[in-house]
Figure (tube, rainbow, N blue to C red):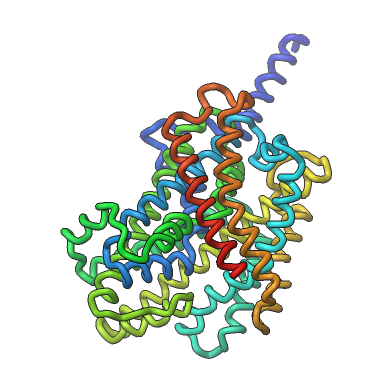
Length: 431
């Protein structure tokens, strides 16, 4: 074979290897087969706290705040889409984008993610333990919480993204079918449901409404969407249509799920004047109400859906935030960008989410730590919205990938919303 022939063969082999590494975006007709990262981020963002918030909204205000839950999903579509768009358009990560705005952003994220992980780890384990302890009362709540944490740790340690995504899809399917089925069972009033989109603001509901918009569908995990698109193998601008379909469809599913829970709250609790406890324990109260009205089978199915919701949120955070942390750590050390599954930093944060927070399962949360966590948490979402406005309007993105008018309006509105919520949260903590 001539040198020219060898060079051509080598070039063809390299092209085939690159094609294997970088899959070609599907046609629009086949996009549904490739969906996955959006379902992962949506399932991660909807946890026990969102179930409680939506149920309480329905139980206190009926259908009046339905519009707020829908707007909340639209806000999260904008935030997760903006983060993933930066990843695809630049070939970089959102953390690298933040670093370009100043090194302070890296230190802010690092401090935040350590404090957040310590508190959230205990919260996620406790939330997952509640339905498990109710379904299988052979062990106390604390034991189930530790089992849930260790299960998440082992699952994420030994599996890669493909297996993780498959399991998350199964959990989403389970929780979706059960919760939507429950909403149908309680026979919603369609005229009242339509009236819930009238943008009404009941008395004493302002900050509760803002919290529903800001909280439903995740907080920091919306920024992890870009890492999951990378783990899926999506690279470059050709994948933008696929990402947008994936992200939007996933949050439509989230929206239906949230609306289903609000229907349950409105029909089952509001009409009967039943008040739930404003914490994860309130979901067990709903189980009692369901058993009294529909029997033990329906109550058990609800607990299964509750467990699927909590487990999917726990697994998503254990995997996605470990990717996020590994990117931060290796950028800090000057060792490149991107989440690194199975790396030392990835596994360190996975352990950090699991084992140190178990201390909080044995004692009340330290008050000072809760104050610090609350302050950082309140400031992260406006940080995300504002930095996405700065990064995605900059010249580092190709013109076709920059924010349009609708994206800018949505992100600017989100930033204002989250600033108001931040002021409210800090004022509450200071008081």
